[in-house]
Length: 213
Image (cartoon, rainbow, N blue to C red; front, side, top):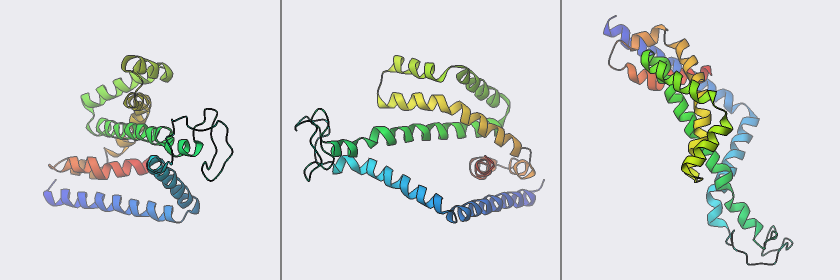
């Protein structure tokens, strides 16, 4: 295969990936519920990030009479221990929303990278990745989380690692299967004949895999 054919194949796959991205965005813009959901998620995440800086009182300090009604000084009253409920509401998003979001995002990134490399490279890489995923999937998720917490403690980083360890193998297998259906196609074979084949694996192929999933 000549360099001209290879370049044409790369241009074709880039155009295909770009067209699918634009088509997906156009469909997204036409769905009102998608806009509403996006705005809602951004609002919740924004409150979770800015909440600790907006809290009027220390959410852990016991400074007030328990079970006070809502007022101008305590917008949501106080709890059984006399803590300001509004301050606790603003500062609670970090552990309830941000931490799980980081954990799931880590699992998604690790699973996509491992699955894509496994499906694209094949051989020993595929064997090692799939065997590790099979071993982790064979363990009960709750037991795996308990083992990780018992071995490394209960810090926030440990929780992120535990959740990522539970979800990464499943994502890896899904992405691997999708990648294996694209690897035999002509544009991938053409891209692998030159030194820029890795860029196709990292960008355009990943786009097509995610659209297929």
